[in-house]
Length: 294
Image (cartoon, rainbow, N blue to C red; front, side, top):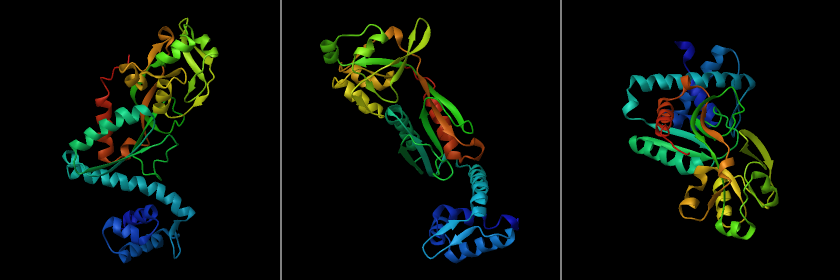
């Protein structure tokens, strides 16, 4: 087992960018960390860390070795959790990347419920839509909407999200209510992700290019702009729930609404996930299994 000594310390140094920070993370002395990493480098016959007075960086060999060892350490942590029967008392930090109004209004509250069930668990949610590096960003899983480009990732479908077109009653009174998607060309439309809207026409999905003076990649802001009468919006139905409920918005073009896309839970490899991440994913899948957005 000597060949495994120093790996946990090395991973901690790589992620903390320093020996002192790694020592604090592992609850041991800096000299212990330094000694273990030095022995590891000696056994491997190569330098893993480039040391300077300010920080510690991975060498080329160190970077390749880190990516392999990271999954090994996660696997060890997973095994320890199972042995210690922490299923009933999850601990540590669950890190989630999420994007969109659905994540804000529905996924986040669901994770709050999960956190309440596990009082020793810390939950961190980062709302952004950028590409996630699951290893470097230390993200357990991401919640994303639409088509998934990276086939190397594992994706589990959370919900299907049919579309809805809507506008404020004031806008419709002033500019008229369109009765066919082709009429949107003469209307001001609020554009979120793209200006090609996919409608169901004659049983087939057909694209209509729209124009407008308000663009935003935040669904909540688009919904608010729609309520303020800035134009017609076309997004997943759940985005408009509050506006429809309080009569700030009216649904239009219902016979032509498209199926929309789906929201997904995305992660790198379930086999190497910590137990808290696996149980959180299972909880969300179960939580939204009865979701109805029709």
